[in-house]
Length: 284
Image 1 (cartoon, rainbow, N blue to C red):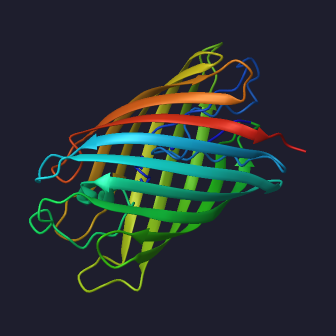
Image 2 (image 1 turned 45 degrees about the horizontal axis):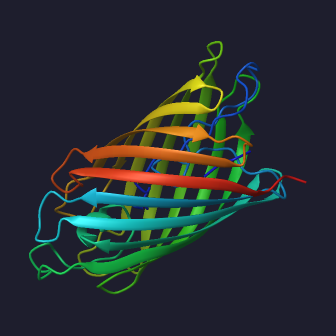
């Protein structure tokens, strides 16, 4: 299984964006088809098998709506490892340079500066994430695939480093229609800021949803909507994103391209992302 993918979330890389997995065949109704996956905006609920290890790289660019610094570049890496049946460990790193106000909206950096206070200077920021995904249901037998994801994040940037705990419910369901299967995913999460500073929101929610259409055994198109609550006085982060994901010959590498745009003044005007994931080892 080859898996990753936001907004980031979110964080989130860029961040916070889309990445999708497609199984080699769609003939079996009982076989779950992964059409959207982390570390873009959607995380799918299927855990890696014991002994399987997967790596991912994402590069992204986004354009802010306002501010003296409009451009932001970001990179994200993630390593996923199956430990026991249904349990997967995840380690990730995000780095961004540019308008950290929009990167903060993706849950990537802790930035205490407002656009009027940044002095027109681009800045570095990022986050380190470690967590685990536990699969409750694999989606067979006509039931949705269900999993839970918990992780800790260290956020750093121009301001004081921040620490967050994130809990997410991951739900996915595939509807086979001959060779052109349709996959749906829903992520519902709750993020808590550990030791929040005065004025910071201690808790916030996120809701991400996607629908994917398989156009061939190795290619899928996906449309995603991501929404995350922000600090008081800021409008919710709201992003619509679409893209394509293609599995290369040999089934060990998958390429993804995605583009999106924000729907509020506190989100990017537009966002572009490129992703590459590869399977390092197979299940035992």
